[in-house]
Image (cartoon, rainbow, N blue to C red; front, side):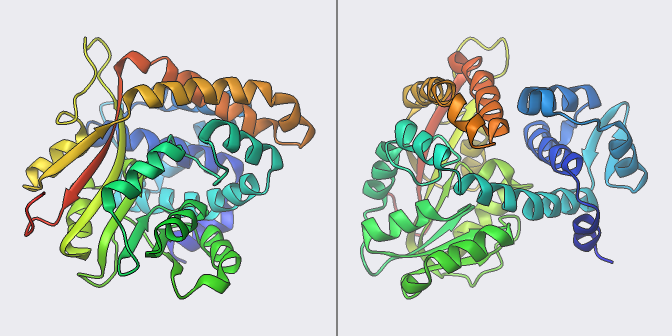
Length: 340
């Protein structure tokens, strides 16, 4: 039985919660690892009273070799990374579909982002317009959306720009649903199951690649960026949304050249320009919190109170870091073509 099969066979709510926390914390901590206490704190912030006991499950993952322990700090092994990816793709794919079916969440998106595209990021209608303006797409362009989720943003961008889009996500349920929803547009809009850690697609296939708040989940960001560049045609471009908080105690926010993504681009000798959306993100988190609170009764009546709780917890977390948090859109051109 493969790691994917085994995960699917025993998937529980605890698995899903722990997988989410492991992936989020592993992405933040990198090779430094994390403590179990840090993991629990993240879970408490995200799931609040819905948080389930993880102690025994965490111990089993360690025994199975999915977690490597060094002086009370843990890192995911390669098998551990596969476990987390599988749990999230199977479990959270269905959760995303449930959220997409919520009428209250549709209202929430309209009020927060200006348009209901089942958003799960900090990208509103204004930022999507800036994305399209930056790429200057036309009907001849072939665009890859890395981490498309339910695919409605991909569909909107394809319709608005006239370009051909491929949406890629690691969760089969959302890709299958997106394929069914857009079956009549298959000539210009496709969805495929894929992993940003691999990006197993033909080199030179796309004139543009976008990633809207998804690159945080790359296990090896340098590898993923390098692979994305390989997928570009000569003169192709990347458009990447990235938010990051400065370390606690640091006086200033990170500048566009100081983020983790910027360092990866610099190390790869890639030239980029940026658009600053820092103030817009802070405003969006405030609007997110206020809107969720206003719609609490509707979420509860719909039987989706946990969606309200998760949204409020996340909003409060990022608002607490608003004075240390930055957001940028990075535009990168293929290294064989100078940035105009």
